[in-house]
Amino acid sequence: MQDFNTIKSVEELRAILGYPSELVKNKAIDALDEHCRQFISKSPLLIMATSDAEGLCDVSPRGDLPGFVLVLDDNHLVIPERPGNRRMDSLRNILSNPNAGLIFLIPGLEETLRVNGHAYIVRDEELLVRMESHGRTPLVGIVIEVEECYMHCAKSLKRSSLWNPDSWITKAELPNVAQMISDHAKLPGMNAEKVKASLQDSYTNRMY
Image (cartoon, rainbow, N blue to C red; front, top):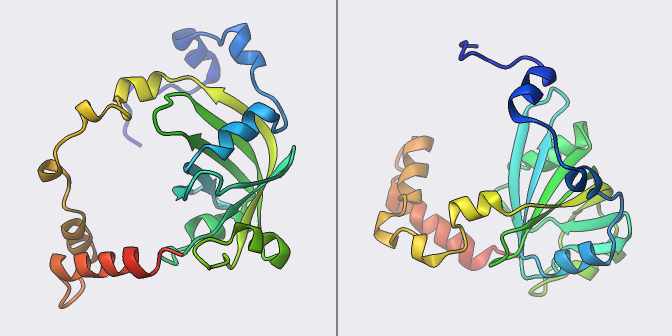
């Protein structure tokens, strides 16, 4: 690893950045209370962090209409596994290392809800049918056994102006995703137009 005057201890880090306030130290709870449940019910998007047994990390979004995450009780929630690209990075990680972290987002709200706990993959039919959408029942779900949850302050979203349309770049300035995928994959006979058509077919016919 290249040396960039790297910090090597918690003590050194604390000397530079300091300590959390009493409010920050005490805001974490170990169960989903009514506030957390309400927040989750209004969230159409979460970001899930996992890692494998060797510590290699992955972060993956999960999204649907608000209420797509099913809260079972104070310490368990279920995320439906909708159709994706079949890489199954998060699922494979969970099988080797159950630790997972979630961030729930609500459009227009700059504070987020963080939930940490143990994850496992389930295929209980009675449970999965409760998360049916567009006539499709998910094949599996991800249960999170909640160990910690707390509100995260709005500074990062305020700095990014994520929910402020005036800060958004124009469509013409957006990255060409199809071109990126084509250039990265380097498959014979595959170009940006074919990737774009494949993406559109997936978004039209294989969302659920």
